[in-house]
Image (cartoon, rainbow, N blue to C red; front, side, top):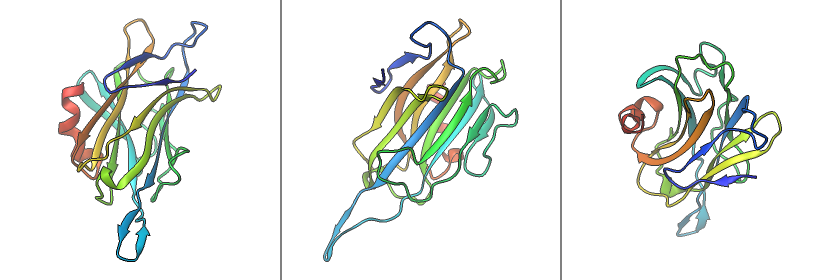
Length: 192
């Protein structure tokens, strides 16, 4: 059963039967919001980019994004860049995290979204970030990106080692300014 996450909420990534999850998919979906003009409404293509930043405590260790599709150790993989979004109902970009093979020094993986083409989130609708058990296909948690706003980036969520050998997900939902994950690094700091 999926959990709709509120900003700041945490959810354990243990299976209902008590076993640990092995591979999770962080999916991102969005749709360009129609703009009303003199001759009706139209939409512009919006290139949102999902990135996963791997941290050893508070120190960046690796990053997975459209130009570096796999972490150096192979435990995190981006499925490919979508340059315009879709209906907002499905995942337009996805990042797979093999929790079993994430190196022990990596304590958290932070997921960000940035508008590479520079449009603000006010121009995006039906955006979501969700976590799926890749083995069973079951959606575990969903965070709806609501409210639009003048920002071009978002610190969406993170998965963190819970101290008992498992992982938990925290919805962050913090707006930021930036077209790339590098631009968002200062905005990530308070959430580490």
